[in-house]
Length: 230
Image (cartoon, rainbow, N blue to C red; front, side, top):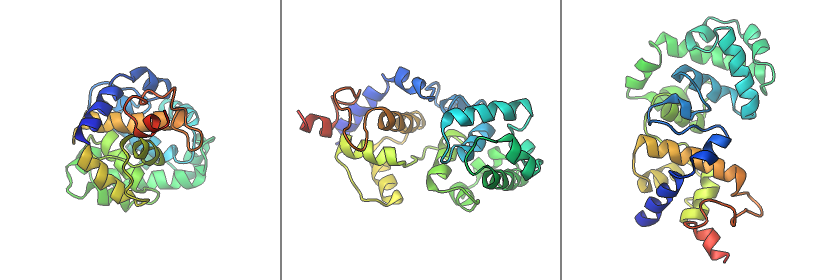
């Protein structure tokens, strides 16, 4: 299994163009650019909430609007009126709910001293999970891409792609998947970002639920499922 994982990671390092085509930008391990070109950790947190059940192209438009208004910081969001913010983020699904949640989240984070202070806490994940509208995948995404803490978000794409590529299937439970994959994949910031960005990209473009495009997939040489179809 270790050999397969290592081969997989080597393949992922060579699909930079694929990742950039859908909005992931692999640069140095600590850069926020990975996350849709975000310029700051604050922007990662804000867009992690906005992108829930919303297309990335819509979120990018909204983020540009927030930047122009100076609302692309947690401090700016914390001081905003939720109703006004809801108007600014028009186009995002559930914008009124998200505006209220974003303001609460921003206020709670600024109250403890901002993201740098949050990163130093021993209960980062618990803190995030206690925020309204922050589930496990969102919390892990914020930790990985905003706070640079090596933790692997588990999306539906993660389950589909890696169950086929590696032949693992711990069931439907999020934490079981997380424990299994973090036990297999070397705990490294760049690698975790690369794996998450790649499985989302591969899952959207090739590893479809029905009729996966195995012959076109960049992972076909290392994928158990693709090789079993030959």
